[in-house]
Image: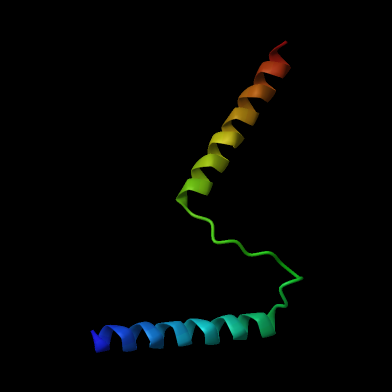
Length: 61
């Protein structure tokens, strides 16, 4: 249990250090980063497909 807690704390400290370094290099107002997952990509592809199909229907009229 103690080893797991120590590992967790060590990982969090490393992540905080990475985030601080990232913020110093690229200020947050310069870009917007979001944690996007597979669900987002799936929805994005579906919407792009719908848009393509709508455009094809429009051009066919």
